[in-house]
Image (cartoon, rainbow, N blue to C red):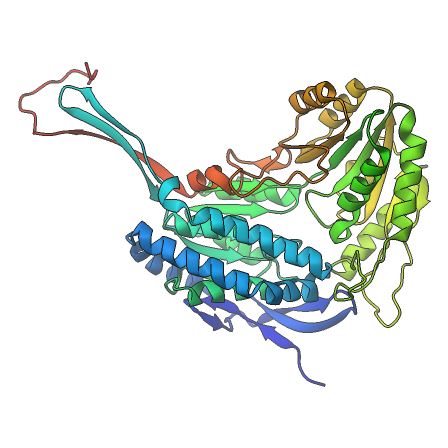
Length: 497
């Protein structure tokens, strides 16, 4: 048998095998076969990647905005030309269906398009004659070497929330993607080099917790962006800020979709199934809890169950597939354990996805699963399952629904389905969640807005991409200037009178 293909680091503009001597298997989730091995970084690999970025950062920060824009536009074109290849890499290692993977690539591409406007985004402010003969203005400077740690569920989109904006701002970037699906991030870096990005401005470093800790502790890394589970986000934020770094750490979610009595139930059922089972529920913006308000619950659950049973769960490369497998055997086993726990706790198991099988594909399968009569103390409600499990809770009023959502420790995304504009406005204003959809089940903002939650879904002060991303990857400098030079001693505090 042929040995598995090796996925290397990408450092200083070239594929680099690494020095740690450790690897991890990369599986095809549909078959369960480890078809690749990814190298795992040790301290020397981290030092090499950061040194390469540090060397490149100084020159790149001095590059003109016009040069950066030309590279970004060329990168945008290459991504467009290679979008099918990138989608296939995602499906081969993550398992999501090809159409879903293509959508992920498109949303990442939109961030590059946003970053192409960096000359406008970096414009400062100017005030003339703040005092006699004195002008004041502000500018923004890059930070230097910055790093990103990204999850398996979006191996293209989430890294591209980070590095295009960081690079456009004049930084060098070290990306530590998930070791579960590492090939697409390497290809992203190669395409950026082909677009004209200088070697070392974007490095890709594979690894596990040891690599993350080394980046967080490295004295030459000035800022770290992270997306992952809440427990790890909390640790990353604490360790990074203790080391004096700027940190944005996006954590987990328990996203609710509130369905009011006046909602179109067919539309709401479609939305719940789409948002709950897309990408096998492995999305931080997936709907995992449906809150049925009033007397609509029986009809809503029946509609969701009918649609869930009809979904085609197949390999992501199958043109008929609507939902693919989970990413690893451990992920499958974890989801099954939650289904077991929900049943044991007394929730009504309406659709059972355990035991789903696909002929000829011994992969990591769980079919769509629906629970009804879920209570807030059950683990299927309190925990982020990150799988195709949808829980339905029942309340009597909109006030009860808002109180339920606000009591949850997560505050990432939420949706409300209604035909009543006043009720929608009430929900939007009172709910303690960072991203709200009104008759939109997955309210992921466009690239020119910013992505981020509240409460235990975000540690740090800034959200991802958009103008907040530009601010995160730059620091402000205020300048006060007088021409010609002023003569004479004045020990008073400048009042700019």
